[in-house]
Image (cartoon, rainbow, N blue to C red; front, side):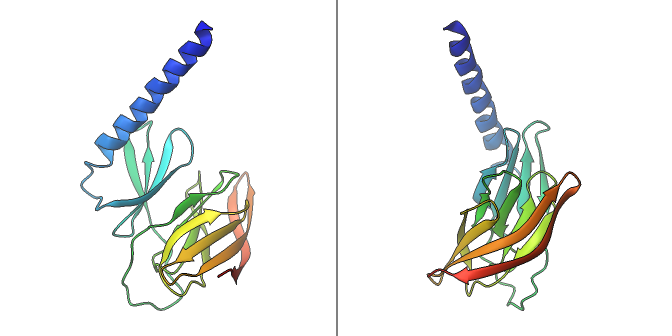
Length: 172
């Protein structure tokens, strides 16, 4: 019984450390406007999206924050952005989807390698949410009331992930 109690205490201590770290490191970080979305990849890595369309990653072990460049949109847009409001991890844990540079796009990143592997286009207005509905299919919902699913044909190997294509369907 004591080993179970000890494990519970360790878990609470670890969770308190991460919550304290997030409060101290993210809220007080000068390069961050407002955090709109976040997702934990594992116990040590947390991706977050900001109001000014920055994709950040907190490494809880090193207590450092890294920012990732979003790939440029292939569709012309007026440069206005809603920020990164959508962020989600697939069930397999190897892919992350987030709002792109153009707020009508979704970008798929490797969760661990943090390299962009797919740019998913097709929403008619800003993407305000996304959720994985399969290991390679992500649904995005837009400000215009539409929902669209995107299947990213992504293959992941030891050397990393790569996209061989994608397709989408309007659901609403």
